[in-house]
Image (cartoon, rainbow, N blue to C red; front, side):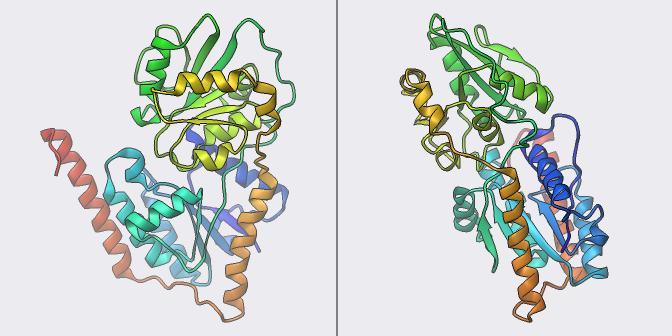
Length: 346
């Protein structure tokens, strides 16, 4: 059995989902189960909503028309509207797309699975939860740089500049963190300017890994983040973590750090972890890419097996379904244009 990722993968820094999918592809290549084209694959993996690349909906539709036996697996995060605080239309499109063409769903966290089910009834006859994992050739604990003993080095990262990525907390830390005890670096895109936190624009994954290894403690304050790749990458580089008690963070952090509720307790929690870094470092969870890739493959293989045994019939596409998706996308885009022009909300 061969599997293909139907996604426009980017080589430049482009968010955690892109980085994970590239690492997943490379793991499948090493395992000799990756198909370089969708036509050659038995299973097609699609990812969430293809912002700016909606033509992938049409491409997958045409593939299913030509090869109705192909199995489609959805990798879902979100709900998107929980992360963005808008665009419920996207989650409704995902729900309909799932009903029309998807054979199985891989949710990135149990939180993600629960919220998609509760808010949008997005479920499947075949579904599972599999966390992400970083590229082990880049994010690992080898060659960790010794840090200065005078101050604990704290780091946060985010490719996205969405305010919900925790910038209210980072701005608070910029004003109230004890910089005689700590130094802090932010790597990525920030919508706010910091006075004491060192800010570095987005860098390549190898450069980011070097920076992570030169620090002692990772912090993420992102809200409703289903499965933070930034957090996973930091843990893989040996950093204990302090994370907002929201989204998938509690599932990922395990015993390798502590959770905080907001600005009211973040300083206290940072101090608690910083005082006992070796203990928390020894308890860090492991995210093994090879194992994750095998679990993805085994999930898809189970659907293919049950189809071959006659216990499952893969979904059959029809023209009306694709027309419905096009209509939903068009209405969502019209709404966004209207809101931009009028400054209103409809």
